[in-house]
Image 1 (cartoon, rainbow, N blue to C red):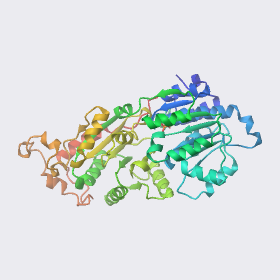
Image 2 (image 1 turned 180 degrees about the vertical axis):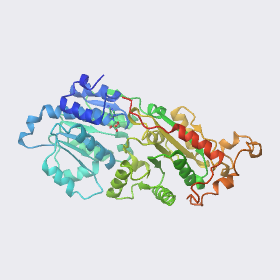
Image 3 (image 1 turned 90 degrees about the horizontal axis):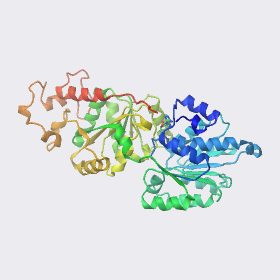
Image 4 (image 1 turned 120 degrees about the horizontal axis):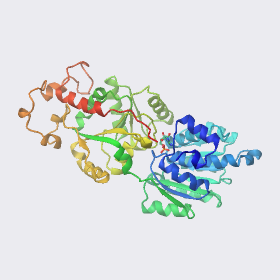
Amino acid sequence: MTFKELNIINPILDALNDEGYEKPSPIQEQSIPILLKGKDLLGCAQTGTGKTAAFAIPILQKLYNNRQRNQGGRKIKALIVTPTRELAIQISDSFTKYGKYTGLRNTVVFGGVKQGSQTNELRKGVDILVATPGRLLDLIGQGLISLKHIEYSVLDEADHMLDMGFIHDIKRIIALLPHQRQSLFFSATMPPDIVKLSKQILGNPEKVTISPEKPTADRVEQSLYYVIKKAKARLLIHIIEEGDFYSVLVFSRTKYGADKIVKVLNRAKIKAEAIHGNKSQGARQRALSNFKEGKTQVLVATDIAARGIDVSGLSLVVNYDLPSVPETYVHRIGRTGRASASGIAISFCQPDERAFLKDIQKLISKKIDVIEDHPFVDEIDDSPAKQTRPPRQNRSKKKSGSADQRSSSRTSDGSSNKRNDKKSEGANRSKSKIGNRRAKAVKKY
Ligand code: AMP
């Protein structure tokens, strides 16, 4: 199946060609024909499947085919509501890319920044608006946005919308939309409250399910390090240096933790920045662009801030802390291995996180490979990895030093004293494991 066979018009085909998209992803193949026919859609799919293009392409195509209606001035005809600013910006960028030869205009509005530049864009006239719920309602309240002319509405990441407490905002927005419209509803999971909400929005929709969580997890090469909390930073530095990873996304459970990881990495001369809710929108955007442009090697993020981050060529995802909600693990590692690319994810498990690990392995229906040889394994008293190995004195005599000697080449904050230290055998073995698994993300469509 090609995009041409999906009856996509030339101005959009040319733009997809510029993006290097050779063929539609499964969600695009299934959704585009439904949407071009004008039907409502209930899509069960997570970010990373190509769902943005699955809705953006048909919306652009339909608006383009009816473009003569723009003569009396542009009205907002398509509305995409999404939970986070990062995701909103990304969706708007996608509309800009796919629609660059259509003459259609889009803009994005989100909270946490002054509204001036956003309202200036709105005044110039737009066909497509991407918005987070709070700022959208705010601007509607000020009379700066009208939803009277909406023909296409998209509710994206509905489950996260509800998790983030947006349900009342969503209901208010829905109530303002014209009755006559085409509605699209996307969610990675379909718990009962989401199904209920979808029924309030959609009229007799067609359903598309892109096997929600597991396939992404299956595509990503996952491994696990048992490690004590105190040694996590040193282990992270060791992995980044030994594996020579160039673009690493690290997940931290807390904002404070994220800042601390950045400090330790920077002290070890590894360029890192953090994004989380305590940072201003400008600082978050800057950190994200620096990371995307390769100016920083490591981006440390909390789950909410990382939602929707789309970085092609991400070489490694690290779960510095294991998440307590197992689905979050799948979302996190889905940052690598996006849109059929393969990826690598590494998780650290400290003793009090083992219950989280059990839940994660249950969800993904497999045991994550444990990397048993790393320089800090001996710091942990009851490591399951250690229990599977013979006692120290019986192990290979080839080791270049004791665990203490091996880790003593670093200061307690994890910075390297002597970068060219002779590496221990354990370190070298984990290096080769990591090195062998290092692979550039390859898009397989
Ligand atoms: P999304 O799920 O919309 O966040 O898309 C995930 C990633 O897949 C983005 O980086 C897109 O640029 C990329 N992508 C979407 N559709 C295709 C396609 N047909 N071929 C190759 N890459 C794609």
